View: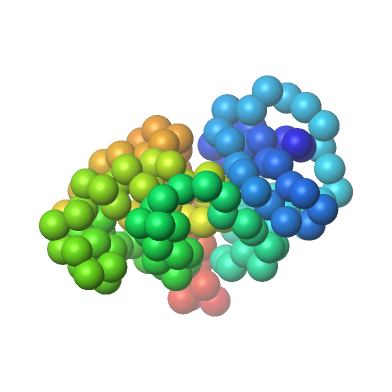
Length: 151
């Protein structure tokens, strides 16, 4: 595991070879690696990267959770979608709470952007890393997206 410093605190990243298998909030300071994931995360937090290309492997989770994580991975940079919209996309419009639980169990947050999932009406609810981190990530993406429109 290696650590990436970020505007939301240190992130612990576990990778096997070049494949990221987990990202954890609130990591203790530790070794920093010259790993593609570290480079991409640093570029993301600097506002220089809007799409991760580092390979990931989503381990564990139920079939439903893996389906939710797949939908989350499709959310474009700077955009948001509701838990209910993901539930509907998966064919179960009443499963918004289950989608929220699956988001909370996302093993690779930030890279698989569960922070882009919000409550009905854009309400800021739920995030495994805490709402303050979610807000900071969404603000970063909104600022970068707005800046690119004016460039």
